[in-house]
Amino acid sequence: MRAGGQGLHLDRQWPRVCTGIFRRGAPLPSPGIIVNLAHRTRTHHLTLKRNRNKAMPYPNLLFLYTDEQRFDTLAAYGNTSIDMPHLNQLAATACVFDRAYVTQPVCTPSRSSLLTGLTPHTNGCTANNIPLDQQVPCLPEMLPAGRYVTAHFGKWHLGDELFAQHGFEHWLGVEHYNQHFRPHRDRSTVPDYSRWLLEQGYRPQNGRFFTRNEAAALPEEHSKPAFLAGHASRFIREHQDRPFCLYVNFLEPHMPFTGPRDAQYDPASIPLPDNFDCPPGDWNHARSRLLHLHYAAGKRFGVRSNDPDAMRGLTARYWGLCSQVDAHCGAILDTLRACDLWDDTIVVFTSDHGDMMGSHQLIAKGLMYEEAARVPLLIKIPGQWQMHRVDGPVSQVDLVPTLLELMNVAPPAELEGRSRTGHLEPGAPGLTDDVFIEWNGSNSSITPDGQTAGAAAGPRDAGAAGDEAAARDAAVGDPLRAMVSGDGRWKLIVSPHLGQHELFDLSADPLECDNVYGRPDLAGITRALAGRLRAWQHHTGDTVTLPDVP
Image (cartoon, rainbow, N blue to C red; front, top):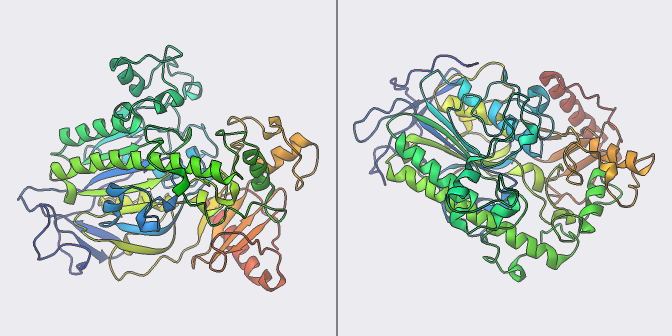
């Protein structure tokens, strides 16, 4: 099914012209386009004019995204210690969203929002490995038929991993997930990446496809990022004469947290997070405490999360993966420039969620802490040549409508996200809307997806009643609903099943070490935030029942 309708005209000049971050009337560093972002009613229009006198009716879209990359891995977000020259260069010529949040901090649900502009509870992908309904359109299906050549290369994790779908004509898979294929799919299908490795002379241990650990042990020239960068660059070269929509997803820096650049960073030089000495306590939700017990016992990744030296070592490898991805993103971006498409292309960089990586002595995702729920978000507009910072919280659910408007397509009315094109020009006001985050399903980071947490060994969590298994399942399965206030100050996390609510004052406590829920002087603020959370539930059809707060 193809949603969406007619594109908006691009050959009309509107009177209001953006200046400052866009080139106008001055020599251009490279051949490209001049961009006018203009206001007319509620829609922003792109007027594109190629300097080489070649018509460019619609901008390309290059959407680069990673898996499990914290927001603070780029210089634009304060980290100048990681070698990230290509993405740092992109940020220097892009709109940098200071506080971008995912809709749910785990892979499938978050990706579903990135592609559909809908929340997980609306599009149905509320936990890992739930396939996206074939009747729920992704961005390519919202484009007018035939206007763009479309492709998705890399990890998908929205069902039927190795098969072209949802409006993407060209498809390359690197992961397997064959146990989650729909019944009519051939489960013996092998990822494109595995076939490529076979051509390079490698042989998988299981005889069919290469596991993540096997792939991570290969030389960088045969890594997943190198494979994806090579094919993405070829796609751009082969389709440089017509508009394209290309999504490229890198698994890295996702676990197994090892790769060809494990030795790039000296663990002794790695700083611990400022909130490393602030592990979850009795004042925090049982899920955070349960995960802390698990990771501190060294039950995943071969390290104890409360061991400073062990976490420095793990973080050093994580940084190496970030630098590896940066290098291959750079190869793709260099291809854009070499094909003289840099100023004709919208470039997006983001991730599907973050990683705790030692913050609060935790690892991985699945939590409402900033380190798991916040991600980098860069959007380079055609013709943009310097950084523009977008202040205030924003949700990734807004990406689809924003990109559609930049591609001169009216967003479908059914989308829950809102276009943020009005914030992409200099002098525009900051973002002031509340952002909402949800948690659904059984993805625990303790047991394989879909299994109960009660199968894991360890002490009973003190915050939940019942036997050990029931207590663990209650902690993992509590369908949390959270919000970050539009002014960026407050984060309220409501616990429907356990009643273990949290409230953080992000202005006074950006490290989230002090849960101030229940303070009498904050009762009015808490009630107001909870009311706005319920209003969002009503607007989006969320059926989780929230208790009275406070």
